Length: 538
Image (cartoon, rainbow, N blue to C red):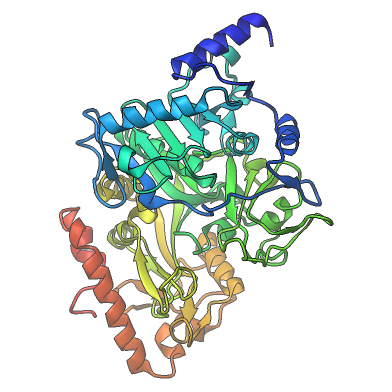
């Protein structure tokens, strides 16, 4: 690096408030970052070349430690509540100063990137972190500036993430809940992360920023996967963690746009990211060969995956560190991925739920109003063992299938979705990847082969004229016949030994839907009244 460029970059760090750092490594390449990770003993290489790291105490996101600064430019837009907890500007500034002081004299790694595949909506991002492996994660998940025609030292970030996992907040002084803290300031377009090494906090904080700026520009930002069929038809897959959106979207017969975060503009669909962040626990090379192959390649970052240090072999079935083992890899690691990470307007929208109550049909057609209702509801179910204190199926609702990352009111996103469904005449589907024949503990999980067959049939048009039956609880049109799927599986009530027990469980779930939807009663009247279960049905 020339002395002139070095001086400019020192000035850039000073502009972020960072003064007197130690050694600064700027936009290192993937091989160079691997060397730094190994030199600093931040991780180890597994057979095949993947980098294995551990995140310590925090093996997942810390939603209770995430706050949004209540400041004048954004306060009226933010949907304040448990997902978007307010934080005082004064305390933000104080904690910001303490974090900057913490970074003095420390080696730092900087990545200049872009967020968003569509150049019309792309935003420049700078990630500054203490560790080489988090810098590699950022370079993997976002588009490196030089690959997008960035101007090197002249790069001007719109968003900045200051990431200091060794920093510890002091709740009594800083107003945080714990030593871990994630602060988002929309006015300054700045994110502060401290006290946690879980890399997903970087990814989801940047997603939160995009979920604020894009809808205000008329672009629907979505927590969903997307792929393209051979004829150019785009499909979206909405779903919470564990419902199958990553697995179903990584289909060798279709081109992958992305597995998690997308925007829908007047030009079509675009991936917000440049990489994938897949859950790996019990990953099977037979069921998910495309994702499995990424765990055996150089450039993949594996979080909390147990490894034999002598042999370098991985155990993807081992949950001793966490159920939430993760792999970050570039989208290009998927052989059938789209180089542009863009596509046209969706022809199909699939909403995935893992229903542990065993009452949702395996697949159903949705009207526009029903699709909007289930989008706002964002339903899935936790099962016993996934969370402390959960001993039986627990209904979980996350608005827009991603409430922790959606700073605006859910009705804002739903309105944009409804308008786009109507304008582009997208077919909408509900697919249940959960239980049949009874609830969790009594019934069985719907086979993934059957789920894949249903998704393929829906996207291919094979179900356009398929016979349906009206679901007695939710009113949508449950598909009664599907190629490659036993007819008996498609009628959930018939799979239960006691149909009356099914009816009681269906009424129980319908009541949970209605209770959850109370805060959204002021959304569009049509989908509030017509989209979900009614006392008359349930």
